Length: 101
Image (tube, rainbow, N blue to C red; front, side, top):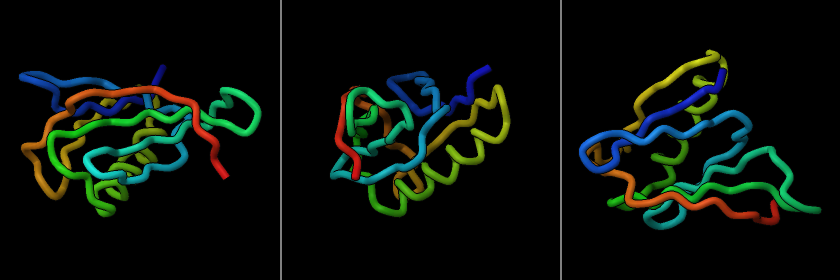
C-alpha cells in the first residue's frame, strides 16, 4: 500500500504517492520531489509541484520531513500545507526526468 500526502487543490485535495522520494527542493513557486526511480542513465524522476504561492526553502524542508514520516507508515495519507502560507494550493504537477548529481 502506498504512502501518500495530500495537498490542497481547487476546492478539494490532490494525493501524491511519495514512495521513493529522497529529496525535496524549492524552486520559485515550485517544490520539486526527487524520486529514487531511474528513468534513464544518470537520471531520476522529478515531480514539480507548482504552488499558488512561493515555496521557500523552509517549506521544502517541511515537505521533505513530512514525506519521510509518511514513508514510515504504510498507507499513510497526511495533508501538507505550506508553513509560510497555509492558504496556498497546488496549481499543477509535472513529472520529468532530471540528471541528479
